[in-house]
Length: 144
Image 1 (cartoon, rainbow, N blue to C red):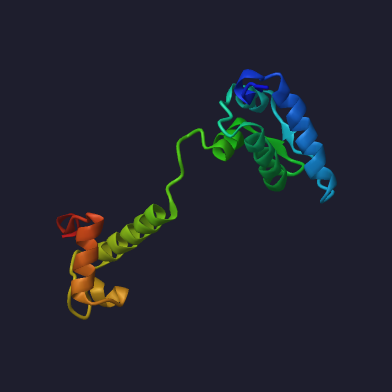
Image 2 (image 1 turned 120 degrees about the horizontal axis):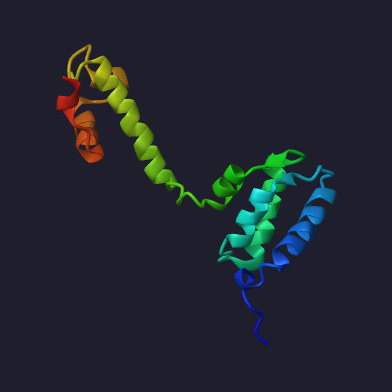
């Protein structure tokens, strides 16, 4: 027996959404979030690659994050990551490290070594900072 994917059974999305909503609201005694018409429209047009299990997890996240409050189209975009994938933790850490080093380099006007240099302020050796600057693709000339 072949069951078509959820994206081909869009009429089931509201029914399943209500079912999962009732199920997840009764356990912790939470008020249901209010989905706008635009939000529901986005859910109907989403591809649901994870099928019913993805819808179930999505409804649970909405209830946890938006319990008793309106759910906007922006919330749906963010929760379904329609705007593109979130950076993984390693990428996010590298971005934060780069921003922090650039901030210190601005303060020191691009000076790396010495008692007032960026390496000293960051609490690292000059060679380590130079390695990180190269690895993160930071242009030192922009700070001088």
